[in-house]
Image (cartoon, rainbow, N blue to C red; front, side, top):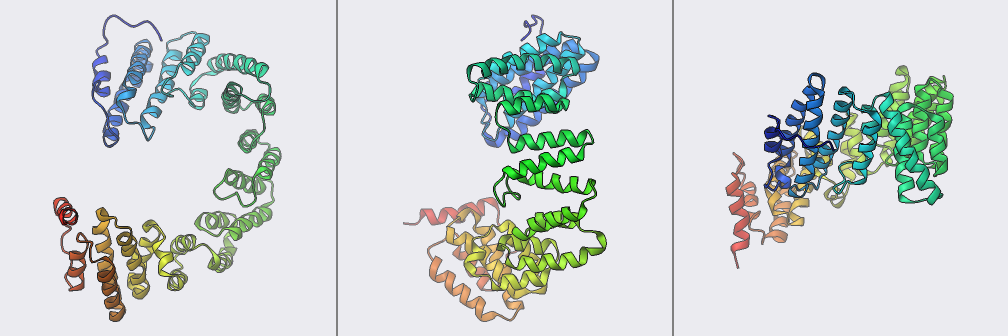
Length: 442
């Protein structure tokens, strides 16, 4: 970094206050801490145009402060590291605005990438490739290329430094849309699906859809069968269909979308299918898709039919589902379905609300007993609305028999079984006392 300025900048105190040296930042304090850092960086960024030399010095001070603060922050989510890495982009913009030598800028960046104990400078090449101007990017490329060539001469087939600098080079070439240089590096390593995607994007940007399609299809051929939904092939599949449409081959794009949907019916493949269906044919394709979804995974079917407003299909599938199946699903999936069915299909809604309750109680998750009781109360209302009093009474008896030792839960059960409404939500301390009661009994 540049030599420290002996005279303190008036904004130094702002940086120091934001970093709060000497205080440990726990995971639950990270949001407020980061908000303060972002506000501080925003003030420095404003100086890049009006006083770039001052902004440059402040960015260096801020970076130094982040490295000094690193061991005082619980950065298990990586947000602090991401913020610190973003300061390099601001530093680059300030150096360029101040007219600094681009070669020195590149060398300093690489020096920091080498001496990076906390990983703040790892994977910053993408943001740097966008921040550096043409001369700066060329200088950075020269320095990285020299390192890549040196590493390749030492380890021609594989090796950490060869792969690392190769990845940085490919990021630069992708930003510059230099396909020839990108492929030169990729072919000296091993062409991957990510490389195929990057090359396809560059060809598409150059308005060469046929070449882009060839690379998208090459990448897809590398993937495992049925890897398109959650694997690396998803973007390539979507890209391929878009390119087919550009080339006047919309029917092929539709066939591809249907094949993906048929293999794994869910809301994502359904949305992609409808994107490729001509507007006049959407009703027929919708019916075909909904019929195919009868064999979908239960979780996927619930999300799909709820989003598509196929409530009758949703109710029929949930009616067939076993209690154990429903209890195994996340509340993010089942709760919206239960809420939607409460008015039109109360018997089915009761079954789902029951599963939401039992899932928590069986697991003994006492801190969620309030949610379990809320769902139990909704189950009661739905059972009674549907005229299923006997089933409600059987559920109460089952819970009493299997969970009578759970003192944090049973008083709520008895209140609900007695027909009492919950009223106001219990306070934090009331819930805490209820949980503690079970621990304090011998």
